[in-house]
Length: 349
Image (cartoon, rainbow, N blue to C red):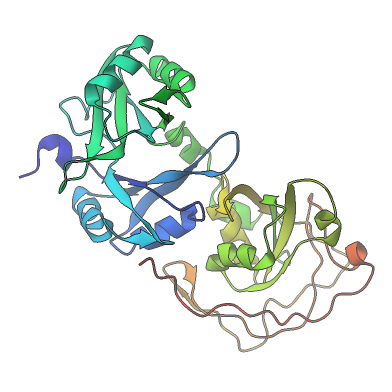
């Protein structure tokens, strides 16, 4: 029988993530076990690259337990997932006053006592627990350390992140992401995003991309939100010496672009980089674009697009306060687009 602290657990820590695993992908995979209420992947605040772990929340303990059993030992992009409860299950774990830190990249010989010694110099440590494999009993390379005071936890995180313990640099972050509850409250509702621009605007502007990212990688990251007409990276950007660039993802439907912007609030991951997604610029001088050819009805399941778009002609230059692409950027009128979308479903393992 589960202890009260364990029975209250509804959040999973998911580690050893490939850098290509972004929030939408992680959520799609773990929703196979049941409805996911919240999901995020943690990124390095300096590089924008995935830190290799994330968190998945469910509405109840039973679903979270089922997900843990279903995906433990499974792989995404060839890397075996490390899964555990997102918070320690000790006597004080259910206290509302706990401020919990995730500590990653631990050496296998680090003990709970060593963590208490290292972190207690910044304040009162109420719990420190290395995660261990339930079968082998070996340390899984991460731990959770809780403080009574938030400012003490924050000080420990800032001071110890990157410091070496037993010959390995520590990776320290909030166990559920910094200001997680506050960020959720600031999320703009989908209906608001939908109404922010003309229904003829079907383009999402994606910034912060690696200069080495190709169009197929961008298409793969955003096709979950609806059929894509075109992905365009301005040639002028490719010629610059910067290590970052932007691109335009042009959908067949206004609602698809709005869905991409809504789901990617706070950023998402494309090809290992943390990118931002906003509305592109629309141009009222052009005639509205037909969202899809007559008779075509895109198919969705659980909010994700499942099929590919038809071949279609037509052009829409549009994008608000963002850089634009199209005839003016390239010196010629665009040609018909005949891009296709992969028909296969993602298989996590």
